[in-house]
Length: 71
Image 1 (spheres, helix red, strand yellow):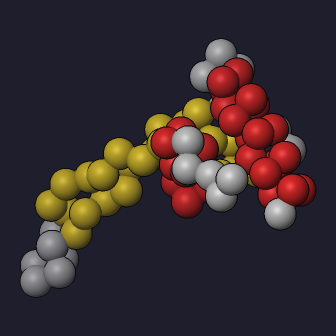
Image 2: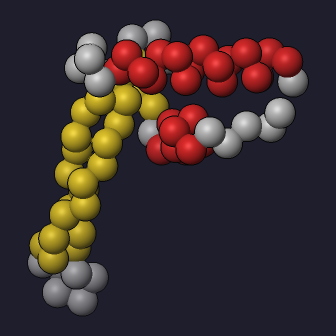
Image 3: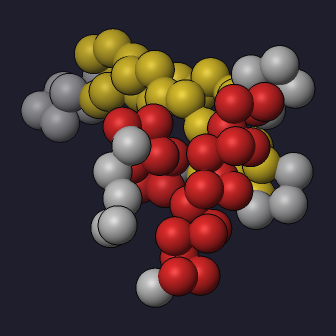
């Protein structure tokens, strides 16, 4: 558990520099009408292209932004 807490603190620190380093990426996910198959819109998604951890999605980043921790 201590290792998980340390990893979370490291991630928080790295996130602070992610914007300045251009590691946050904006992606668009199409929204398709299932009845017609036509494009109904798009959803904007932000992903973090971390230099060593790879692309991090909201499941990993959102708790860090909100400050959710197990401690």
